[in-house]
Amino acid sequence: MIATTYKQAITQGLADALAEDDSVFLFGEDVAAAGGVFKATEGLRERFGDTRVLDTPISEQAIVGAAIGAALMGLRPIAEIMFADFAGVCFDGLANQLAKYRYMTGGQASLPVTVRMANGSPGGFGAQHSQSGENWFLNIPGLKIVVPGTPADAYDLIRAAIRDPDPVLYYEHKGLYNIKGPLRAAADARAEIGCAELVRQGGHVTVVATQLMRHRAVEATQVLAGEGIEVELIDLRTLVPLDLDAVLASIERTNHLVVVQESSFGGSWGATLVAAVLEQAFEILDAPPLVVRGDETPIAYAANLESAWLPDSQRIAEAIRRTVAY
Image (cartoon, rainbow, N blue to C red; front, side, top):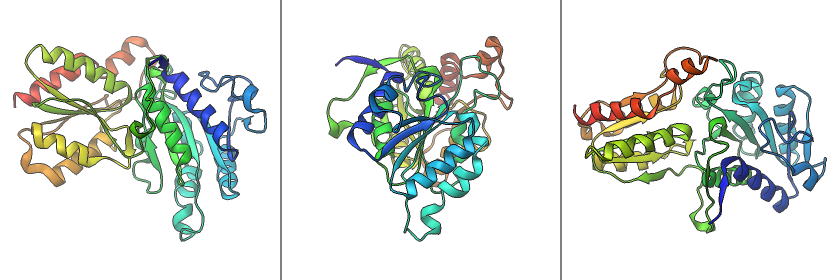
């Protein structure tokens, strides 16, 4: 299969969705004429026209509000908020309107809205443009949250998000746009919302990671394999709904858990996962679960400080060694 980049996979997924369904349209800041600030929508306006791919004013509140209204009128909007950090500007629309509309109408109305956001570090974007914004929405029922970490998952999950009858927050990792990999040829093998991936089998410890941390965890497993430590690696791919069954099944085999995340600890998906595991499988753990994470500080602009904040393969490997040796 031909390798494609993560960015190209997203562009292809958007193009295929637009071609397949006339009710799908894409809009946001700079997505049309400029092809997106990260060029993930390049060429789409030329192919589908300026009634299907539209630029908007710099107003995240307006973008989310328009997406809600369009969905209520029977369309399937794809709204881009650009940087995930900007979700704070339109938080009410996402948390109190988009997430709750089906519930507050007794199921009479659904909002098939996909909200695309560029997530995470590295890149030197500074404290206000480098955060892992998915953690902000974990405690808001009604929103699905997907975090693809490979080109194949980026394609599959953007298609799944657009097809979904409910709102989906789709996080694209800025540090992964240029990684390459094949797409899945068979439709029945494609990733779906709510299904984790078993990336690597191993019998000593379960490691759970997403997006950039998935790739750094893979680097750590390669080092540890030379030391006789076999890691079982799981990429959740979706944070809500969470595939807890996949994690618990792995822990049944390994009796150890290490979570790797690109955020600080409080209120994070890693903390949530550990709490769920302790609630349901405390007795099968041979060591306390460990969360490898960023510090409780904003993310620095300076490259050396940003690098120190982000978990790297060395820090991940050391955490795994400590857990297995406990």
